[in-house]
Image (cartoon, rainbow, N blue to C red; front, side):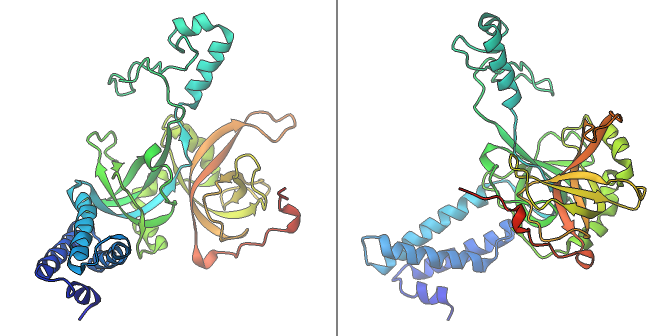
Length: 365
């Protein structure tokens, strides 16, 4: 007799009904949500133990029924959602970006310069509160928030990756807004998750997804190396070598969700993160750069765990950025860097991470 059967045996009269309904619920969760039946039973047992401690009644039958009601309510919401289950891999996850920061700064600067003008141009209200000045979205649809106060923040992250949909593997893009900004997810990782296919698909080559209201990214057993190899054709248009960075950036500069895939060597990792951003500078090199080339600078956010060291061969996902030349001298011009959104260290070419020297550790207090 299983633990769940022993637990249900304590109920009188309705125990069989509860067991039948719980089994049916577990089967539905496995078929529609991909949740193993054992996980549903385990949650039931945990909830039972919890309720037994807090409910006033000592009637086992009542406790069992209350437990089932709670479990049914939890999974019932999951089952009602039209969100689909996806299996695949992420390539990159951008850092949170505040969509209204620039607009708020412009409005506040306009208010400081000429209050009446800022009001007349609709940038601020009479109290100096920044307003939404965008009458229409890029799609042409009217903005319902036009003329209303801008929120303090409107954060967004973008998740790019590969999933199976309608029997074929496709690139996907999914925004995570304020509600999901802290959901744990990394680039270059295999996951299962629930999402909705967006009604409007702007790019036939990229599946647009919207996150399920209670989205979670769950690990599953998949070799990243094999997955990247198996989907070479899908990401071919996003691949570049380091000597192509300027030309590649020129092609994708106007794409807000632009990303590239690069296989390169880690030449250097700064042991001390940037004190303002927390990002860590790395220098990348590959066979396409001349021997005397200083390498391509990339910035890796602190959200990415560093379990590899200089000398490692990696596959990275990132966004190219054009910036003012930082080399000094009389050369002038532009420089191109990569903001990393995901890293996969090739296991057989992975050098262990070096310990951070004590001299590089910032003293606190």
